[in-house]
Amino acid sequence: MERKTTIKAEEGKQDLVITREFDLPVELLFKAYEEPDLVEQWMGTKVLKLENKRHGSWQFATSDAHGNVVLQTNGTIHAFVPNQQIIRTFEMESTPDSAIRFPVQLEFLEFEPLADDRSKLTMQIVYRSVADRDRMLQLPFAKGINMAHNRLQDVAGKLKALDHDKTK
Image (cartoon, rainbow, N blue to C red; front, side, top):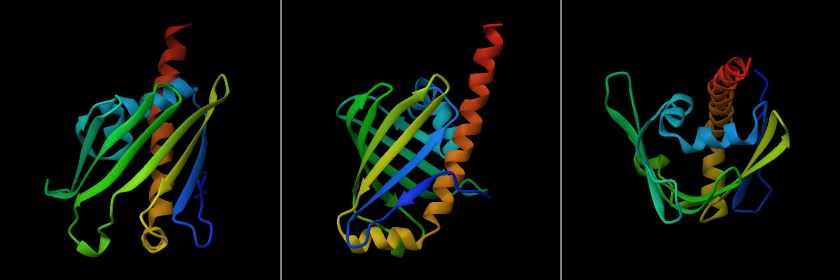
């Protein structure tokens, strides 16, 4: 499967820059990060809290097939500019394997219109250390984020098709 999501990790730096272009208007791409039911669909996780505002917070829980929570994540939203930007922290609350635990990271999400029906997401993720960033890269992180972005394209793409059908 082609990886449409790219990850740039410069040697010796403690951040990652992730980019992806979507066949979606920027408003629909942003909506996929803003609306809890859409987040649940493309991320495959339960949204426990999502306060889309400056100083808001968020909390997600991922469960296995038996309903056991295997991962909880949370953070604080530092900036929320519709259709443009989200700045937030990301923290793992629990994992079945404590070796996968990471310190809090800072995420800068930038949403950019490219054309009427195309947009670009750029995410810069800053880790506490180069070692923490490098540990993340040892996980199947690149494959996972590409799969999630593929699902985001599919979920939001269906909304785009519905909106198009309504205007006919």
